[in-house]
Amino acid sequence: MKKLNTIILLVVSYIGYSQTGAMATFDFTQALNMSESINAGLEQLDQLDKMIDYYQKVEDKIQKVNRVILRLNRLKEIIIDQKYIFGAIGDAKKFIMSIEDSNKKRMYVNKLRNILRETQEATNELSQITKDNFLNLSDKERLDLIEKNESIINYNKTRLKLLYNTK
Image (cartoon, rainbow, N blue to C red; front, side, top):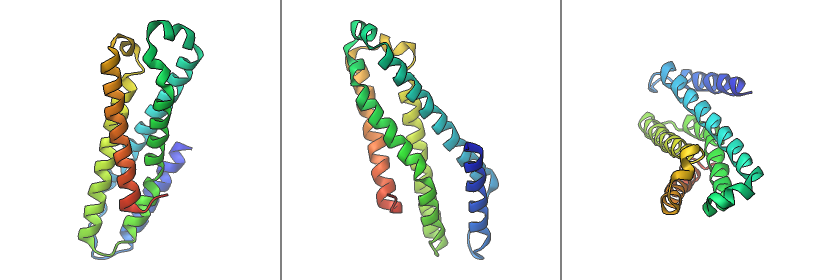
């Protein structure tokens, strides 16, 4: 399914860029890198989902080790927002394709690239808290890490909604 989405993404990008004459040239490598970035982000989100399920199954043991793990609902909400961001990329690309002015189009592409990069970085950092060293962090460090990445994800989700009219 991911391969099909990637192929569709590339074909739509190629068709959109090839239909306008004065627009910036299509860079296949850049589109490929963007799709790889999206796929990597989705894989990390799946990994986070699996880890949260694992933590829920052994909740009794984890409560003895650390009480902060009980905030799994907060992590689930962050994951839902991350999935929204990666899922709304298609709507954002449609919006970008509808723009006539190549300078505005370039500006929106750069903003979308920044949203994806920041979301990817937050996803990478959040995936670290599900690894073994997560239990070695202090409560404050763990909460700070979650809050920091939660605010980044919420900010990017809002930017995506406002800039690209995604639902």
